[in-house]
Image (tube, rainbow, N blue to C red; front, side, top):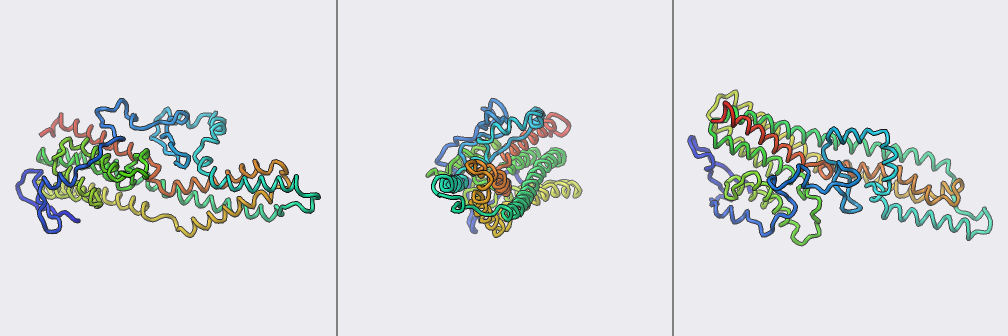
Length: 404
């Protein structure tokens, strides 16, 4: 449902007339629609956080990433600090990375069913050729020269897959960065050029809420990766976390913008787009020069553009025919690999097969994870950073010339 807002020449900043399906909805009705029967369990209000990263369960080995709770979970890095970069470039990094191979995301994700099936084939082949056949002519194997050419082609294909996915990841990161920088600019211009104090506060809250709404818009769990989809109240739990985050911004659970944004989420509307509409309403009703109005609207336009770019990445994967074809070829290649290397490796066919399969299939699996950047980017940290930046800008201007 689309909520239409009526403009008044001189109005109290929070006054708006809401029409849902041509019927007026009261504040009490919105409050009833927006209420949640479940309490937030994963979101920690800012006042209760011991540190900026206290919301995250940090990996004990890699202290710059979120702990993986399941074998199939991807690696989710947090924002780097200078200390993290120092460790990242350490001359001992290769030794550390080798020691943690079996705990790495690609290896654990490939353990079952990929490595399991390949190991069964490699182990059975080794046992048959060494203990069941009488002479070498009865052994099972294939010529490795032709297989080597196929391996080169598959390696090139997986490399292309990784590069294409990494381009999506890089673009997604740039778009999220654009939202962060635009939010700073919009907050600064709001404090300078929005005249009414109530409108300034309202706009600042909407800027903070935009990043939160965008996080939940691009990631089903709102980047609360510990929430399991199998929970019977999964939808209610997600909504409870969403509501708790917004309440941390608006403070008042009867605030009209808060109720409206929560109701949009309930109705599965495009909440970030709705927030930009509210921003533009404030800009349109601000009694200021045309130049300042256009500048404010340009910032909102940049937010909408970034939102559209993120939606394009989220809704459009790489051509699925290419993904499926690569997956099929890798499956066939990895299961034929033992037959090609047995004449050379003999009893060591099984471990050699796993090592070679890991080197190629790991690249493809990383590419699959990068293809959906909003499942691995630290969206929650970006939203928190936007809140902190906007709040700081607000406090600086509120204590100076533009306080009124």
